[in-house]
Figure 1 (tube, helix red, strand yellow):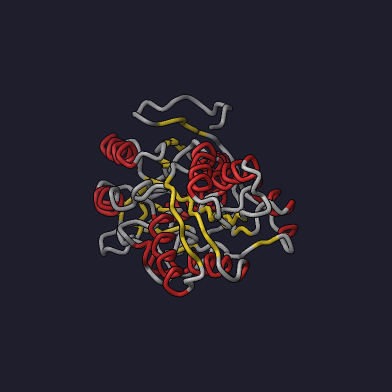
Figure 2 (cartoon, helix red, strand yellow):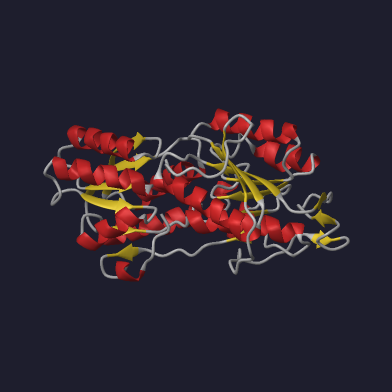
Length: 358
């Protein structure tokens, strides 16, 4: 967790900071295609924000944003926080940060409390359990005059949609990012299969069972097991996405499977912990490691060969883009329904061209 303090602690339960920073404009944008939002009388008057339900959300003035972090206890959450603070300064908007702490019920309570408080007219939401907060974010919030931008994980079971366009949930402004998808998991796992041809005994280190990444990952692992029987999955360890749990999970897999040849981790902090466990077990030559996330630490590990490949995620950009989309919508601008971010696989051969965001 970041040690630097920003602003005062919010009055609502679970708020980690309140930022009210005046700033200048920014050149960042959400990208993608589609449209939402229409101004009734300019940015100084009332604006009707189209959320795809036929009933627009009426807003005025600047957005007062509740920003929800999945969990601030890892590097990804720190980068989301940093992006939110940067956007608050750039656009001169008030942003209250809520840390879900990887706890779905805690975040549900945070969202419900914020809706009832009447303090906010906008949410920027990274769901812990995208089904649990589905109705709150896509029905209750807009009915109470709150515009919701969802990022990182799509709401209401839409993680399984085969197209990027299907990730947006009606009732919300938009969905930012798109790397936690069936197609992304498919491409990543196929890259791993190509990187490690022939028989493999594989250990999996994943996150919470309720989140979209884990669900997509598990689904695609089942497909790989059918299409690539040479990939024998020896076991799966679930974690809270922290380095400590990644280390412990890898230790368990290594002890239970002395002939393990590959560990696949679906988040970079887990990968860092797994790498330490592999090294301490003296199995760096035997057990290879594949990563999803592309953190700064993992980038260095790809460079030195201790991690074979990674695919990046962009927590800073998704945070800033989500807040920017809310600012644009409140100014009556057209906002893309989905703001996808790029996908690429990096190995030692091309990692020098990659710039990590966390």
